[in-house]
Image 1 (cartoon, one colour):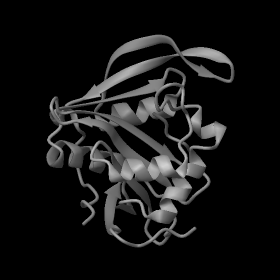
Image 2 (tube, helix red, strand yellow; image 1 turned 45 degrees about the vertical axis):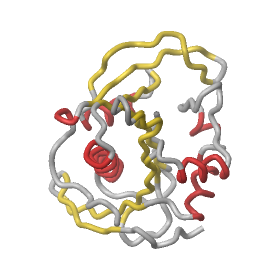
Image 3 (cartoon, rainbow, N blue to C red; image 1 turned 180 degrees about the horizontal axis):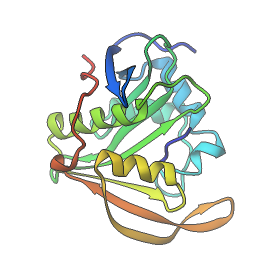
Length: 201
């Protein structure tokens, strides 16, 4: 899980002005289009971004075909987001590994700090996708993890409402060094309340 400080297709885009920290912040959330898939694959090909992730069996990058297969699978809920007035996505928020029999999933997010942003954009997009996962996918518990030294991601998770539940030691490798992962979980009642981006549709 990470929070990193081609014009996409306008389909499924929804705009709304949101009050955050006394300022009006407007952002959108949508299902990824074909050009967004290229952006997502490009982000996850960058070592500075993919070093924070683990997609299983040591994979930290995802090619465009893998992203496209995730979009077609009921096991993943992926959305891109950005500020109103800018068509290109600035980040991705996802709940993956949806297990409907147990009502569980795994949350992850990234934001490209080189692209435009607005106040609380990543927080608002994350909270909306998590709310949709609880309500539409009927999940009961969503997990997440962050590298112990990734203070920005840990702050985001805790602000959303995730609770730390443990430490997985010496299990991640960054720049040749081993480090820990902080483990989190989130129940529906833990999710931060307030205004949200309306679901895409």
